[in-house]
Length: 283
Image 1 (tube, one colour):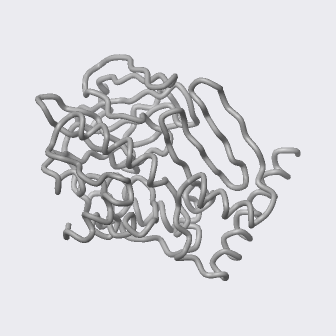
Image 2: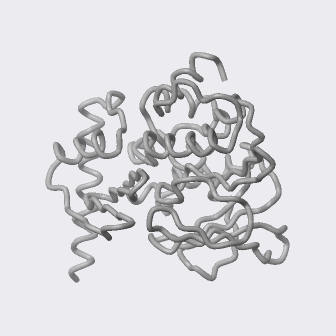
Image 3: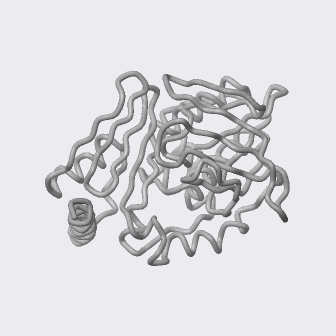
């Protein structure tokens, strides 16, 4: 990573001096990354998905953009390595079925070893843990949210791994292999996820951001706030002006890369999908 990208990335997340590798520094970097860089599929929805080269992702973050797991954790891994952290990438899968032990390869996650301890680190879930978790079996709580890390009993043909259980949100299980992975391992899946008509990232607009108290999620026109202390609230966004204002303010996503035509196309797509969803929901 060049020094300019490095400085721009750190500036985006509000850290002027990250210091040398330490557990304290790692925790601060993950918190800042989650608070300032949203999980979003804006460019996928517009039919121009960005590649997952980590340096490209880092440049996009410095410019105010976001991405999904391949971008977020890929760029974060590069930043951590540039700061001297020992980072390992892993292939994973995010599952709606809490009993599903499969690993699709549709998720990139990280482990980081620092100060004699290995931590599970993930800035690419949108609504995942706010801080790293030590990579050992156990139950954890952060700001009213409960998690558990368990060793994963592998399916046939797969090596050992780990499972994160999330006790809130639509995807209660994240599995990942213990074996290391490289960026090239995710290219084919990224192509499918970002271009195939059946992909959830192509079908549904989504932007999410985590903070110390909870997580905000905008799926289609429904804005949801999950607060560890206050519970869940939601509201329906009414028009394009409110939609883009929320993306900029709540999710801190810089929108200066979108032309007027881009905004019109994105709102039309989101609104059309929302109306279809409402019709199906009400029979």
